[in-house]
Image (cartoon, rainbow, N blue to C red; front, side, top):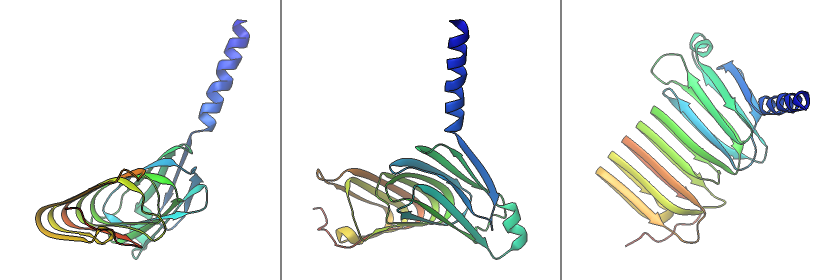
Length: 208
């Protein structure tokens, strides 16, 4: 009986290890790993330009371009986790952030993004979003479905342009919030210094 239990335990461990993925590549090469629809993806990046795009494929596909070939070798793209909960970490290179990363994920993916400075552009992704940027721009756009039950975006210094709701605010400590009982997902975005844009196919009335 003890032998059978030990064998079962080893089989379970093997299954758990099989579900764990880890891959790393320099900028200039592509990185790809399985990622299911409705997965949660955490992105932790050094300053950069990030373009996060929804697709119909059950994978995360990451490509990176830099004008400096030497810097490209120093920048590392690392994915860890499994098909339901993944983490993409982008490290290395200089601190200017003069390189671009395109991240393709399943259309239904929840995102958690943290970066000190740069640009985060999210297109056609349906899911919860929590994006925090020290300085730069956050742009969230969808021409297909804008399905949020809770929206809270803010800048300490800069602009909030919520075109989808017909709101445009600029200056110090600007916040835009919207609640909708019919929505499914939550959206939180914050920039200390910079700009946030929410762009959709149809503008909705701004709250009172």
